[in-house]
Image 1: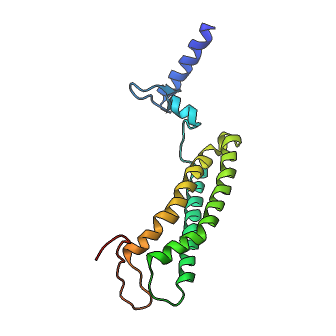
Image 2: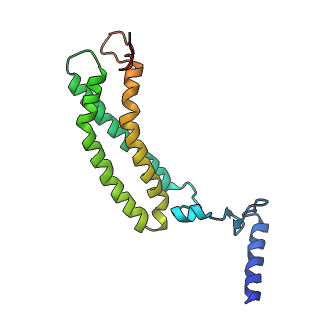
Image 3: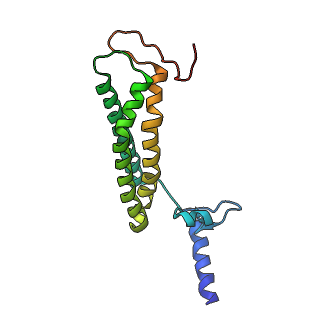
Length: 173
């Protein structure tokens, strides 16, 4: 038995000596190529991630998902605004309230499917599903609570009107 372990160690060292991977000084490595997984990484199910095509697909999917959520809310603002020219904080708040249940239900349903894929999908899907899990939460939050206040801060114009930023709701003249 000790002979077998010594043989494996020699194979590992010879592989890293060839130049495929070189261990970092003072860092535990597996096969001299990647850092050894930490206890926290093992508990979360994330160990040695490398960016691959599945992860790029997840980033692109999240970009489209978040953009779609933002467009739905902006479209509701446009519908509620009608032919009026003023964009008020009350109008934006009403539009958020009208689309909030749709946004949360869609995100929650997608989150359940992604969570099942993360748990039972195997290691091939781990990168994709890990990014999707956190991305859906962050994308939903940013679509509602970041994108809409930016409209108020930047000011909005319709046609050739002058754009003027609105004052915050609690500002006093």
